[in-house]
Length: 104
Image (cartoon, rainbow, N blue to C red; front, side, top):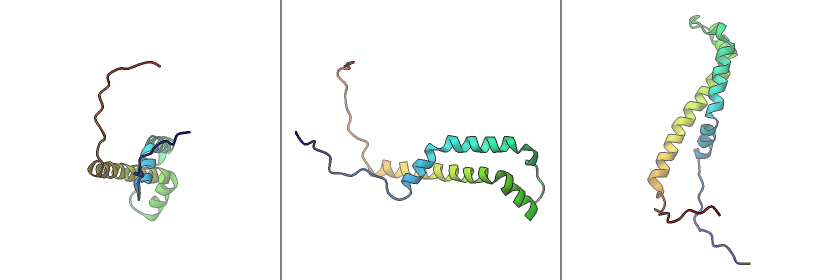
């Protein structure tokens, strides 16, 4: 059996890149959680001033929404920075011309 020659360069992400790419893939779920939590707790969506009681009420009824919003924000910024760095450091590949398309 013939050995398959593989490219010697490893292609992997390091640092924060895997985390932000994971977060960017789950962004629709985070948005759904935010919408659902806001719809189910509409009675608590009013301004009551700044106090310890209002902060605890906000965390009780909208804590998951705040966490999901922060994850979305971190995922968006991190994905932008990751792809910007990848575009700067890695070539975009080879240009290929298709001559024929077959349905085999």
